[in-house]
Image (cartoon, rainbow, N blue to C red; front, side, top):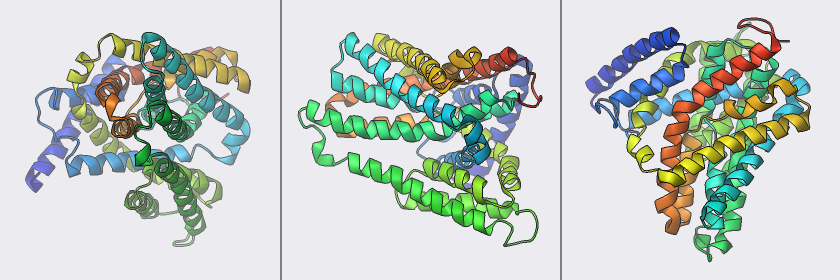
Length: 398
């Protein structure tokens, strides 16, 4: 895009985002949903006025917004939070991932798909959308045990999902007659996971040590931005996950920095404009044609993922001793799905080309559906949890 077009596009997106935000407030919709619908109307399934997902400006804005979200989600894993909700976060996140893997696999296998393909699609279904979940929590105005636990789950369940996907690929390769074995996909995935953890930990430790040393008093906004952009750039250059890197860095920083609250507030203060750009452009990238191509198999996949998240959330809540009143609400709150699912689907399609014609259309179509229905259901679950706890927005947590 030419520079004039970039400025006109960004200005238009901000204006559309403002209108969508006002509409969401009037209709009591999640802002995420309103922004996605606005982008959908202006994107490839609508007026085609916004750039495609492959254009550099789209990629830059998306990565910037997600990097900030990852950093903020990592900050939810403070020592205090882990002491009070650590067991719930780990048990719930593992139960949701394993529940999704089990229920979707069995359901699709019963539907008639080969077991290997069913396993791959189930592993892809474990991914969530941390940006949408984080934004819905922020919009709800809730700061409760439920929302703090939810933030912690979202911060780590994509890592569990990537590990599960790596193991599934390893299992499926011999089942598929050795297809894809020569690509050696498992080791690169494991390298990406553990390399991202090491990079994030190193960046978080450095950021924690520097906090308050470069300038006296509170940390500057530029310090926080420098850390986020350097870590994101390093992750991309090393072919690592900038999401896992950012989350780990945020988790380490929140437990080591002198002024960690202010450091995260600096990012929080500037993230909304990037989030507007991200969600409108994400909506523009949604392809309604993929939804139309889903058919009965797609409907079964969507229904199985919904059921599996609810069951997994309930089981995790029982195992962790979470309040019974909110046990059934974690699943609906974890339905949004986006980039990680598409990324793993691309890997699966390249590794097992004989199933690519099913994997990609199914994942893309389901992602559109879950991006549109996920945020409203997540907001409903958060409000319902507050109602069960007798809490109103803005109240201190119980």
